[in-house]
Structure formats: C-alpha cells, structure tokens
Amino acid sequence: MAGHSKWANIKHKKARADAQKGKIFSKISKEIMAAARQGGSDPNGNFRLRLALQKARSVNMPNDNITRAIQKGAGEVDGVNYEEIVYEGYGPAGTAVLLDILTDNRNRTAGEIRHIFSRNGGSLGATGCVAWMFNRKGYLAVAAADADEDELMLQALDAGAADFTADDDLYEIYTAPDDFEAVKEKLEAAGYSFTEAEITMIPENTVEVTDLDDARKVVSLIEALEDHDDVQNVYTNLDLPSEVAEALANE
Image (cartoon, rainbow, N blue to C red; front, side, top):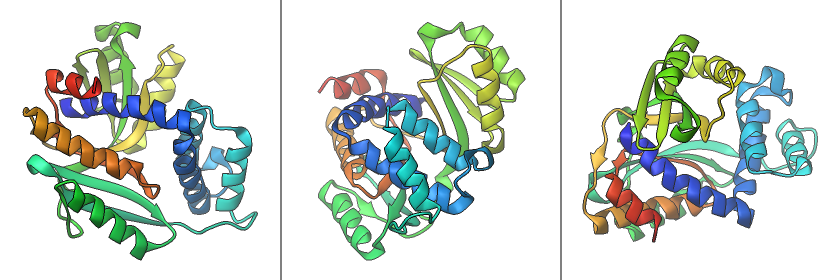
C-alpha cells in the first residue's frame, strides 16, 4: 500500500496540471454521465454520482458542465452512450496495470490502448490477467501537516475504517467500499479534509522499482494511458522508493 500513496502524489501533481488545461473536465463529464445513466440524476440516491460530483467540484468544474453531463446521462437530452470496460495489462519491470475505460467505440479504444502499451514497453493482457492482484476499497488521504497521527487513527478506526497507514507526509485510511461514505462523513464532521477521497483498486502486493530508468518507463506508460480520453482510472502495483518518486516528480 505504500506505493499507492507515492504514486498518488505524482498523480495529483499531474491532475492539477490537467485541470488547468481543462482536460480533466472531459473525463469527469463522462463519469458523471455514466453514473447518472446507471443510477439516475438524483445524487441523494446515487452514491456513484455523488462521488463524481465531489470530484468535479474539487477541480472547480463549471456548474453548467456538471448539469449538462447529468442531463445527458439521465437521458434528459441527447448524448453519447458510453460503454464501461476494464482493460488489464503489464508494464515494464514486472508491474501490473488495471484500467477503467469509458468509450463510445470499443474497437477504436482497444486498438489505441494496445498501441500505448506496446509503444511504452508493456503489453495489453487478457481479461483477468491482473485483476486478481487488486481489491476494491475506499481510500482517504490526509496531509500529515493537517492532523495528529494518533488522533486521526483512533477517529478513523472508530468511524469504521478497516486500516490506517502513515507514509512520509501522508496519512492513508482504507475502508470497505460500503463503509466509505460513512467514514468520510464522520471524519469531515470531525474537521478533517482530504487530499484524495475515492473508491479505488488497491494492490494486494506491490512491485518495488528502484532503478530510475525502469521507473521512468513505467511512469511514462501510466501517464500515456492517463492522457487517453477514454481512460478514467489507472491502477498499478508500482511501488516507488521515496528518492525515486521525488526524482520523477521533479523531472
């Protein structure tokens, strides 16, 4: 799990840059549409939509964009129907990669994702080849500077969290998916704010990549996948030592 936070730190730096370019708005719009199509346009009764809306607001997505995405997903206005797919593959240095995809053209997306893997030293795998390495969990991250470790741990566990870890400058809280919202709300009520809050896929075991060149190749693959418009989420069992993660973040 340690690798999750270190990779997350790199992802957040990139996410902020993407938000400035407006690129992330398109992906969040698609997620909102998929959530509204699946569970309706009322966020009070649609947990997935509530999460998508929280993500949209965290990057200051305009309300008009949010409203249009909900209406399209719920069928209130004409829109594109997106298919949800999971792709799996292997990256350099023996890493595993799991992708959440939203696409309106399965064949086009499959070809493009396969090309990204191949171009960056990886390979697209068969269904089930790496999914067994990951577990779906709720994940909450709190900056260490904003909380006392012992107090936060006690409150998180009391709220129903399944696990708590302290890694560098970040405290990480893990929950069962069904407990995520309740734990998040209790900690928010206690005054905590999160650098990340989501239902995600956590690897059971990680692959530590200590060589900077190998790490650069893996990160290059993951960034190329994240840049693809149809890729909503990239999960990996990559574990970067602090010095390698810092070197990459500063490049």
